[in-house]
Image (tube, rainbow, N blue to C red; front, side):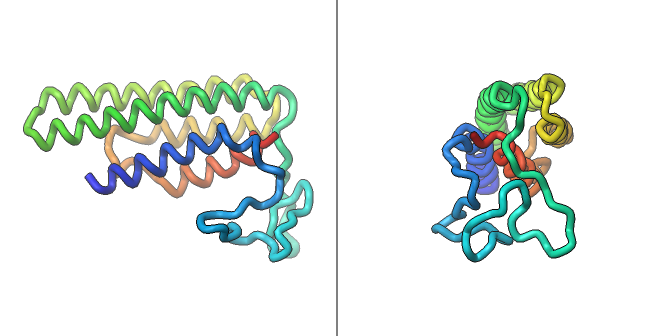
Length: 176
């Protein structure tokens, strides 16, 4: 149950963060307790259009916000993800509680609803990927859809590191 709470908090924070990404100024934002993210330059100023802290000789990574219909696609993706994540976490919690209480039918019903939320989430990301006119946004949304498609209604199926990496990429593209 403890891992569920940690996973739920991480998932909720990851996908709620996309809604706040428009508040960023483009510079590397401090992490927890004000610590700059790993790889951020000591000056705290990123070179526009490149990945901060990239090793010398490595190709530059385009970190500009998504162009084209990026704002609309980001807003729709964030709304869909937030709703689906909330449903997934809620139903997964209900499933675990029911299983702990010996309510097999209740656990299975909640598990089916959690899996439906995952399908809805993955489908929404793929739909927004298809709508996106920015190739980078199109790619990251498709990757999120694929990753969510691998998840099941269990805590063990959630790859928090992969979701966090994808969310960071999405945040950069959805920044205003």
